[in-house]
Length: 382
Image 1 (cartoon, rainbow, N blue to C red):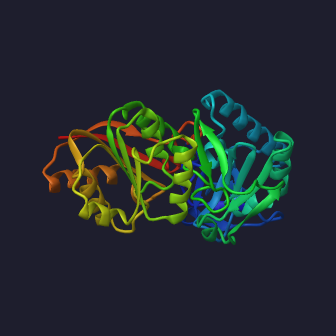
Image 2: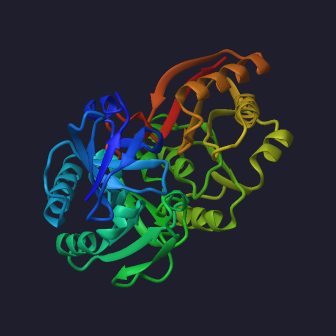
């Protein structure tokens, strides 16, 4: 295997539990007999950990174990089984869609597995995990007999690993059209072939549940609504009106199916295919609840502007949900700054009353804050 020597004192974060060694911490690569598994030594030659090595990535080593365990199919099988057992303990009733494997959070770096009914969607996101692909597929076939297994290794992060994007069937055949799944009894249609993530924003389940708990009799504005998960949750709670805004034609098509499947009247749930900023610029109505979940922006001022516009649409005494996800340059502190600027620009008082994060099927390590992909705040607006 590769022998990786790291620079002085660079072992401390690893021994404290951080699962990544960045390329800048690597001193030299001594020798190898296996192309992907490596043993890491500190600057004095003492053993630190074993992991996956990738010379093409800024994350040079993804830590697998701080011991000298064998890194093989048996190890993967044990960790996958533990992850499955954990999900059985925490997934709510009447829910058939959730994350089974959350990469580093389940000590399986570079591997994601999501369940949608009788379909398992896999993502192989790093080079070494790609090399264990056949073993992992065999484990899932054994653990979920009769399930269709589909691959969505089309995340842009694969390019940074030196890997091509790929997507398609592995085992079995997907049903025609979109998949229907349940989340706490609510019916959702999912596009696992081309939809965002692996087909659905599974990590937002606790947010949808919270929205459902407070929306009865309220007017709700859902910005960047995608397939309408937040809007549907509000409708099912008995919201008086819900307006969803997004530019995606395909997402709006699924939103309409979600509306029909759950018998939501078009008089209650309105959907607008339009740029959100343009909608907010021309729309003067105010709402009891405004949900703003923008995509990752390249400039901080774009967040400032969109949150300012959204905050201005909240009725006095109303509630705003402000969220960001999978944006490494825009975390919770940047979100707070943007909301502070929006509050100052609008002349409104915004008080934080709660924090939002991903569901428990998206565990992450306390030593690895990069594993928190959802940042969100609940605000009272006056």
